[in-house]
Image 1 (tube, helix red, strand yellow):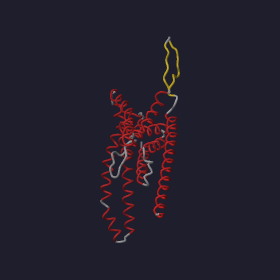
Image 2 (cartoon, helix red, strand yellow):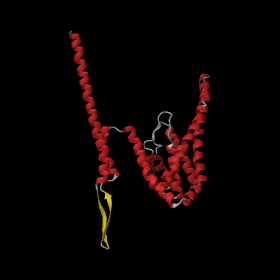
Image 3 (cartoon, one colour):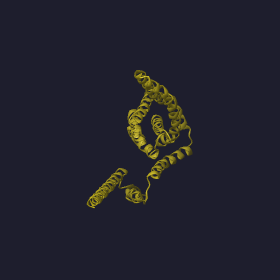
Image 4 (cartoon, helix red, strand yellow):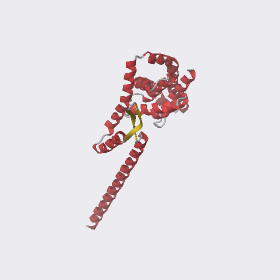
Length: 282
């Protein structure tokens, strides 16, 4: 458990660093949870959980200083608890959402402390004391990173056994409810994203994706046993194949729009030139 706690603590600190440095988006669940799974010895589970958690938080975007939820912290802790105690995706999702909300409160509290150092930074600049400025900057930076490292380390070290006991204590109906919620939340994440991006012109592409996934299937593993035909429907097109088709359609749309924009700009330049020449001719 000590090694797992160290790994989670380091991943949390690393995620906060790459989230702060350059806004690389590598702290998103689809990357950071997959990395966590590799380090914890569960690469397959990490990739699956990362993809599912990314769907849930797909429409969760921080605008300016507004942070709806700390998706990085929630995803790491939710996935870490699920992988360490040997639970499935339902546990990861059930834990990730509330932890992400609590993470927002922690992040806001730490930002208050860091912001309170601004007058001291300004004083060092006015006094041209750049060495003190550098020391204070490194102090607040490493303090920020160490707080998240110890948070991940202590939470996993102390809370993993408690989470395992809690999951085993849950009655069957509660676990079934978690399963239902785990299938609904990704749809909610996509709905939040569509709410921001939706336009009437996008409707045909939306229903095209739905049709490719819903209508292209065949009967697989058909067997006849005791006079009963059994078999499970299986999609001809996987999500990866549908995404590839979507990428091609998107590329065609973008190239068409770029071509149209170039035509409009060229026409505008020609008209402007004609008007100027006509002015000097008069």
